[in-house]
Image (cartoon, rainbow, N blue to C red; front, top):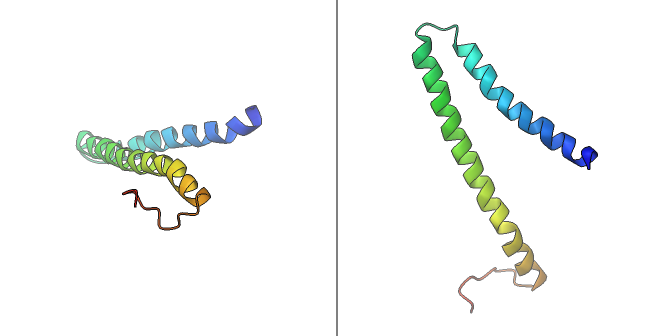
Length: 80
């Protein structure tokens, strides 16, 4: 299980480290409070979009695989 989980753990640690590195990089710019708040806002907006799209894609897995298994290539949702 560790062999399967280790890449995911490293990816999540990298994702979190990206935010720390962004904050450290802009901390040396003039007016650091403004730049750090802009970086934080960008991270929040990016994460919201990324997790929202990821959630939709995870929700589509079952729907698409069931439609494929049933041979319904048009994937009609209205039941016709």
